[in-house]
Image (cartoon, rainbow, N blue to C red):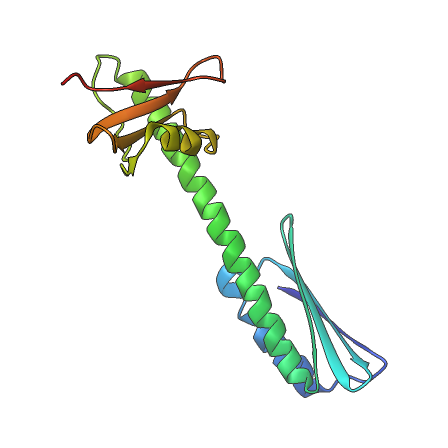
Length: 175
């Protein structure tokens, strides 16, 4: 961890330097010791402002808070940074999981060429009229079909978008 602590318009004490070093050291649980941090402390009116910037690889996390107590400002900054880091890590983990699932699906689709069911999608089926189902499907850009219980016949129907992109079709069971 490379840490640079700067005080603007006032002298930094050893206790505040040690406090900031300890607090920023808590971020090592997310990155290890391979990150850079810059802490800038200043006084603006009655408030003491702490601004902390953390750089890791190509990402930068930044927090700045002001309060009457410099230690409280540093604590709040660390809370904000930890939230940003957790959010970023969660986002990356989800992306990695999606990519892994996609790769698994692609590889299983190539291997399983003998007509087996390899994927199941679950839908909730709600009682709707055909016109209401059409409106729901029009508002859903990512789906091409919608199963529903037709309130007029009390049977499961499926409405789907036709290839022309303008019209719809309905699948109804026979008797």
